[in-house]
Length: 535
Image (cartoon, rainbow, N blue to C red; front, side, top):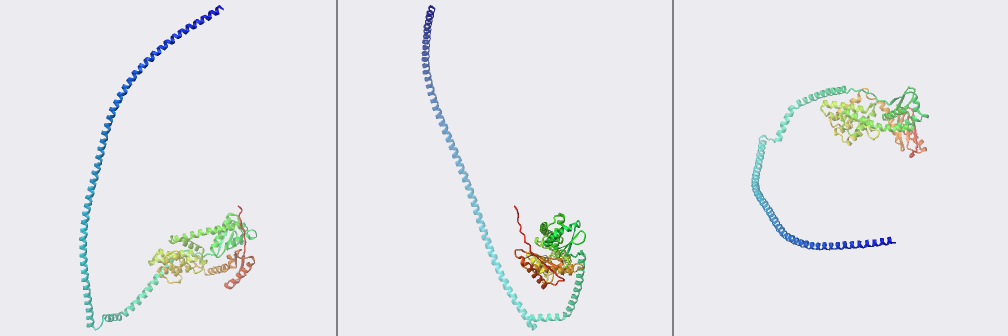
C-alpha cells in the first residue's frame, strides 16, 4: 500500500510540475505572439504609408504620361489630316489636268470637223459643177444626133430621087441578080458536099463500130433454166426426197422450182425459169447437204435465211458492176436495182453483163466522137434498169427505167437515153444515139441471145401472172417446164370447199388466154398452221 501511495503521490507531483512548466511555456509563447503582432502592426503602418506614397507617385507619373500621349496623338492626328488634305489636293489637281486635256482634244476634234465640213462643201460644189458640165455635153450630143439623122434622111431621099427607086428595091434587085448568077453553082456544090459527107460519115461509122466491137470482144454464155447441185454420194438423194416425199415437196413449194432427181450419179438438177428462185434453191440445198439435218422445218428456215442473204449478194453484184463501168457514185437504190439484173435474162442473155457491155461500147464510141465518155458509160449502163422490176410493176421496162431515173435525179441526158433507146421518143443528144447503137451491137452479136428461150420464159411468167391475179392467192409457181402451176392460197380467205372452184377458174382462164402444147396441171394448196411458243 505504501508503495502505491508513493507512486500516486509521485504521479501527482509530476503532474503538478508538468502543469507549471506548460503554463510557463504558454505564457512565454503568448507574450512572444503579442510582441510579434505589435511589430507586424507597426510594419503594416509603415508599408501602407510607403504604398500610398508610391501610388501618389505613380498617379502623378500617369497623369504626366497621359498628357504626353494626348499631345502625341494630337500631333499624329494633325499629321494625318495634313496628309489627307495633300492627297485630296493632288487628286483634284490630277482631275483638273485631265479635264484640261479632254477640253483640248474636244477643241481639236471640233476644229477637224470644221475643216472636213469645209472640204465636203468644196467637193459638193465641184460635183455640181461637173454635173452641170455633163448635162450641157449630153444636150449637145443629142442635138448633134438629131442633126446627123436629118442629114442621113436627106441623103437617102436624094439617092432615091437620083436612082428612081427606094433602098429596099435596090437591095432586092442586087440580091436577085446575085442569086440568079450563083444558084447553079450553089446547088452543084451543095450536092457534092452532101455526097462527100455521106460517104465520109458512112465510112467513119463503120470504122468506129468495128473498132468498138473488136475492143469489147467479150465471151458470151447463154443463160440456162437449169442448175445442177453435186452430192457427196447417191444416198443423199433419199434424204432429200424424205419420207413419203415430204422434204422435196416442201423445198419445191417454198422455192418454186422443180427438183429433178434421176439416175445421174451424185447430181440433183434444179429447173426453173426464174434465176433468183433457182439461186435460192441451190443455196438452200447446198446448206442442207452440208448441215445434214434435212426436214421441213429446217428447209423453211434455210429458205428464208438465203432469201435474205441473196438481197446482200444482189447489192454486191450491183456495186461490182458500177465499179467496173466507172460509176461508183450511183444512188444505193439504183445499185440494188442494177444488181437484180444479174438474175434477169433477155433472150438468154444476162442483162447485167449486157448493161456493162453497152456502157463500155458507148464510152468507146463517145471517146472517138469527142463526147463525154463518163456520161455515155453511165447512160449505157442504166439504159435497161427497168427490166429489173418490169415483172412487178405495170409498164414497159423503158417507162419504168425513165421514171426511176427521174426519181433519183439522174442527168437529163441519161433520162432521155433510157427513154429513147428503143425509139419510143426522139433522142435529144449524141449520147442517146450512141447508146442505142451500142445496145444494138451488144444484142445482135452471134450467140448473144436466144429467141426461143425468151418466148418460153414469157409463157411461164404469163402462167404465174394468171394464177396470182385471183383474190386470196399467196404464191404461184410454174413447174415442170410449164406443165404444172402450183398455187398456195391464204387459208383465212379461201376455205376448203373453195379450193376446187379456184382450180377450175384458173384452168379456164389459162385455156382462154394462153397457147401451149400438151396439158397444164393446176394444183391449189391450202395449208393451215397453228404456231405457239412455250415460255
